[in-house]
Image 1 (cartoon, rainbow, N blue to C red):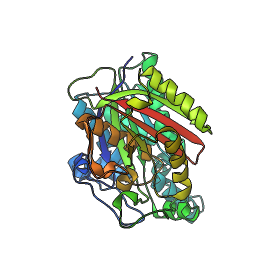
Image 2 (image 1 turned 90 degrees about the horizontal axis):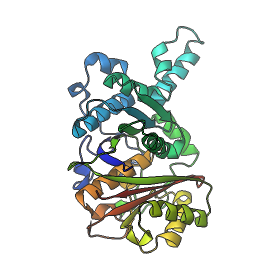
Image 3 (image 1 turned 135 degrees about the vertical axis):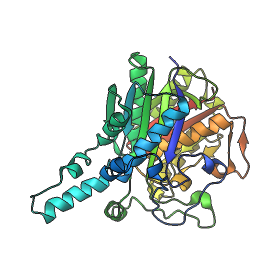
Image 4 (image 1 turned 60 degrees about the vertical axis):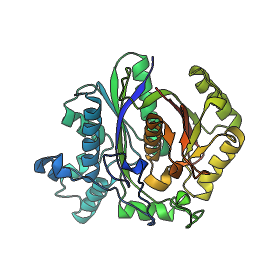
Length: 349
């Protein structure tokens, strides 16, 4: 059974709800960058906005527009990935718990601090009563959501599914992970925008379905998730993934990697690229969208737009100042702390 990415919408450090970043990207010099939000009153009533945190607003608006682009009224399922969920509401609830000595607490902060509130809020907004799930696996949360979607398709339980990745950034959250060294971007070259990275946040929604048309972005051929693999194990599962798509490594036109100028993070990518993809163009994306637990969702989104437009702009290519034209297949390789690794293959329709 073939699976296609029919449409996708993002709210991030780039212009929201559009693909303007493809031709006119916004570069950031700050160490942390919040999402550029759309004008929410254009999409949500005052009553809805008042009851929701920004992350829920982004998730609902992005989901609505993704379905509108695909001319789908209601999905068969909703599957989300998030690293920490609505962390702003979690912090508000904990502060309230402390300041009020565990008395007179507002229940809305507690309800909206649970991680599955994102998928639930989208389902309530769309009146979707189908399969609903949320994956919380830090840096591979989105890939787990994709894998679950694949399982649902293979079991013929659904014909389409709304898959998303959502995370936000708060001051306390940033400080905590900054002290832990997560935002160590010491390999940056200030003269080269492609090497810069920042702590970011994002909401990305895409619709997967089993049928394609002229608006379809690309085909999602398959996904492999690995835990603490050796390079040889990555090679084995890569060959298996490519074999299922009836192609080889030589047929891959570009490899998307999650380099972010953190020495420990990038060393893993450099090693795998040198051993497995030494002759394949490398594509970066975090210099535009930032680093977060849900960054791979934006990498998948960026690759799908490139396949639909049939070229990769130079600002996404690591070692080229010219566009890469005529692309047919893109492989996404991601790892989280060199423990959880993923391979996702996309191809032209």
